[in-house]
Image (cartoon, rainbow, N blue to C red; front, side, top):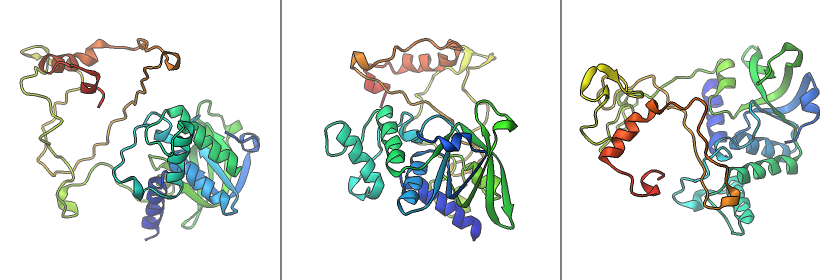
Length: 296
């Protein structure tokens, strides 16, 4: 039950919607009532809430920015009934609205979101330890007592830091702190049969599929030439079957029609056109007629 409670706490915190430090960057030992690991939107809000109720707090972020996906490009909010969004989540969207001269706003630029998360930190007044990642935990029986972090970009034992806290909250997307602390976990997607459900596991949808007759081979019609980049040799399992696959990482791109707000789109150094051959063949079958055909 203890493991389940930890997982539920992390899930609730993450779903809740979810710089700055001077002393934290230089101190080898940091103590606090609450240590929040992961500067996602959930992490910022959890730390903000804890500080507002009078706790001492340290927020640790392995990267350089706060806000996670909300400030990293996912600026188009999937929203159904907006009236179910309350508390600090609603406060966030209304602060976004204030920036754009509106009551509230659900579509926004990453830099605007990041600025608001930084402002939560500033208003509450808690330290943030950027560019530090977890490498070790210390437990006494079943209680987490302290963690050790290292510089994410230039690891060195000379700059490692120890954080002691009464409570630790894992607000990362990956759950590394929970995993290192011994919380049980699983990877992949479960089968329908595991919990007597109907839409888990493999599901071949009637939408979001390639049209028929797109040639999958490097040399069209020649199976011996091998498959194009990005096509798997695996056989599709039956609908509802489970597996150990993890969703791929992907990139969100923010575009603008305001020239002074643009950064030119340049060709990456490692660009390989062969990786987009399948896309070209898709376009031959389904030509793009407008931006809405590409960017939904």
